[in-house]
Amino acid sequence: MASYRVNVLIQAMCRNPETIARLNADLDAVFEQFGLSEAERSALRDGSMEAMRSVGAHPILQMHWLMARQPQIMEQMSILEYPGLLEE
Amino acid sequence: MARVVSAYATSHILFSPRGVERQASNVVQGMQELGKRAAAARPDVALIIVSDHMFNVNLSVQPPFLVGVADQYTGFGDMGIPPRPFRGHRNFAEGLVRYAATRGFDLAKAEELRPDHGITLPLLFIRPWGAVPAVPLYVNINMEPVPSSARCHAFAEAIRDYIRDERPPNERVALVGSGGLSHWLRIPNMGHVSPEFDEEIIGLMTAGHGARIAQLSTADILRRGGNGGLEVLNWMMAAVAAGEPPGERVYYEPIPQWQTGMGGVALAV
Image 1 (tube, rainbow over the protein chains, first blue to last red):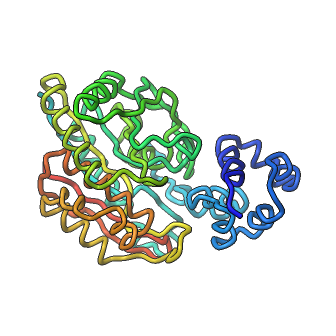
Image 2 (cartoon, chains in turn red, purple; image 1 turned 90 degrees about the horizontal axis):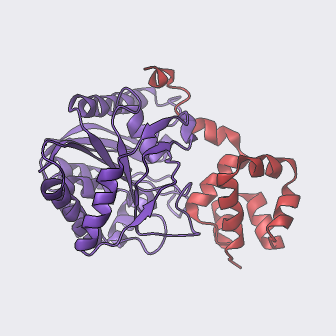
């Protein structure tokens, strides 16, 4: 059952790096704080597009979730391997 | 009567070049060329037409069009782009909001934004960092209802007239349409790239027919270019605001490994 709560959690996370650290330290505590249902928790743990869509996660917020949970995605989607771009 | 001295449209993301070194190099060179030309035009202000990636504008409040009016911004710091400050342009931005209201567009204003890569990546190529004050104009292509193509087109005409009729003589304006090309982000068909759609958009832009992009409905664009492809509305708006000059294809690479078509067009203003 889709709801807005999943998106509330991810949006809070986007603006607060501390939430990302807490997520990675104790996922269940954050789920509890945001009042997520079992289905929502399961979908976020799963992380697949189908699972996240089924609980109403916005596509862009899905990307934020993946980047927070899988730092290698954030490293891929960056300019870090183009060091010349930061030289003035 | 101000002048548009630079106008271009460009994709606004980079991924690791590993495995696609040639394409990545072409993309970066293209972005560098666009930024170099923009800096050489010595603009007094750059209006960047873009869509926020829900770092600032998210489901909590969903304005169709939003203008940053602050004197200064600090980038969000995503995509590895350092969160450095850059100047805004309050006079241009607030004037645009006032003028747009006379043309039937009631715009949202923002004093506090942390612009993400949609703005900071194009700015990274206009050297040196912060040389040109920037005004963020956010078009809500991410949350339903997306402003219609016709509405975006009419708004772009109002921006064109604002620059031409309302801005101080000798002011030099740069326009950037930021985003695109085809990509399907976390929706069915994810990972698909459509060179056919991308080429059509680039062809229209280079032929001086960027306005015709507005003949595609948002449903057409979504179907043919994906949800991320809706960012071509930002390209269309830059073209219309620039007076629909012809242009030059500076780079294009469909990169399935990046799950997107990457392109840039310089308009001959």
